[in-house]
Amino acid sequence: MAFTFQINNQVKFNHDQFLLNKAAALTPKLKSTVVKPVAIVEPVKDSSKLNETGMKKTDDITNLDKHQLKRDDRVILDFGNHYVGHFKINIRHIGSPQDAPLAIKIKFAETPAEFAFNSADYDGWLSKSWIQEETIHIDQLPVELNLPRRYAFRYVELKVIDTSPKWSAIFSEPELTALSSADWNNYQPVKLSDHELQSIYDVSVKTLYDCMQEVFEDGPKRDRRLWLGDLHLQALANYATFQNNDLVKRCLYLFGGMSAKDGRIAANVFTNGEPQPDDTFLLDYGLFFISTLDDYVTASNDLATLRDLYPIAKNQVEVALNYVHDGIYEPDDDYPVFVDWSNEFDKTTAGQAIIIYALKQFIHLAQQLNHDDDINNVQPILDEMVDHSINDLYDIKHHLFVSGSNHEFNVASQVWMVLAGVVSDENAKQVMNSMKKELFPITGIATPYMYHHVAAAFFKAGLKDDGIELLKDYWGKMIKLGADTYWEAFEPENLNYSPYGSPIVSSYCHAWGCTPAFLIKKYLLN
Image (cartoon, rainbow, N blue to C red; front, side, top):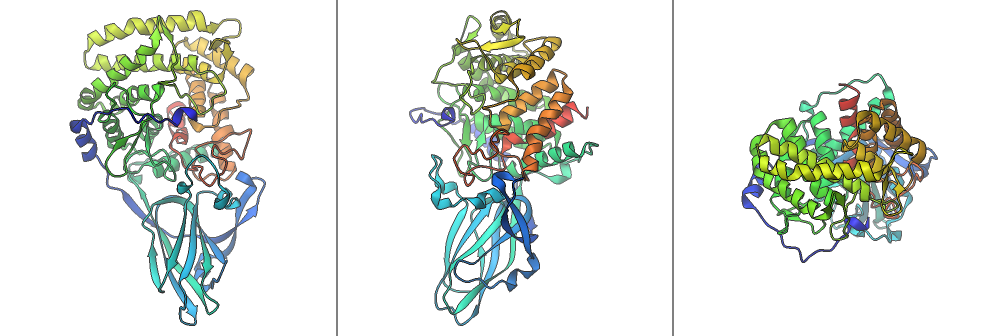
């Protein structure tokens, strides 16, 4: 995670108003849906769920206003699924006149696991201000309490800090206004004969839906930012489902309109209020601007947008090639390659493959605009990088690619070399089979982001059964643990893993987990 936490506040940015105006014009109108809770629940110990915490129904939601709450009493409302939006509730009192303010704490949770931890105990490096809790004093009842902040949640805990000995608080008519820019009218459901794959597909679509706000957010609970690596994957899932191509286009214009003076694109941008680029830079994320643009043009045939953004894509090539000499990618901490959160493996060969992957897509873009000079400049470097990869990085004895000075074998190197098309289809199958034999079970990788690329490489290599197995073992396992939407981080070998030390700030609806819909549609339904 060190790669994603950078301070580069000396960097100067361009603000191309032409591109930013186009992004602004594409701002979607959010669609709202009123949702009511379905039950009153309480956490219970459940060894089959995340952090061994499940939920049991304790009362019908129609009985909510029969609960008279005093000091330290609480009720937890279950909305039946994950949502993103605004919460409101009516509160009145019963008993003597209100002789003191009502003090309440409202806690929003995406999973039952969050109720197993006390927010006061959280001491992680990520800001505790992301914890979804509000303490509110209400001087006069009755009131319709409308919380102005947006939350991502399934469960709402209403806890009375205090009333007075003379009266009790009663809650009624809770509801949330759920928000998304996705349109279910544009979505064509798929019917799969495999019920587990059907669930994996459906949760994937729900994850994407909740992350589609005014941009493709990485996580609607926490960060709420537009990240390029997430966008690359969300856009693919979008083409397979909601087909809101204008939202992809808007995000591309946002990145293109705020590049750094040295040509690099920020890894993410903030879009609450006036758009602002972050001062974090990742080489592979910059290159995924090319990938996302190429995928978008393929899906839309929008050559006008390609013409607008082609110079930005070309800049990413020029910047990346500063780190390539004689066909060899040479990592630099000033512009690190991300690949995955994990720092437990060498990323040099994966970085080499990602550059190859993006250069091929850039050439495809250049061909559509007849920019022959750019093709002629890039093609020899691409050929040199492929030759180096095959001749110097491929271990023919093990049928695996090595990475770094210690000639390390790791999953990411094999996956990205296959995705980049460095080896033939037959050799790709051999590489992936060798990877499964030598490097499985996967350890030390904790994100659906990297697992997506592993699954995609299996499918690309023609190993359909292995791809399906991974979908079920990873995304299917999250569902068995109680997921309504896919999580930011998940280690199958460490079920309670949180990158922040507590699930209270972990994101349980995260963009880079949404790709099973794309993979299933592309490789299993076509």
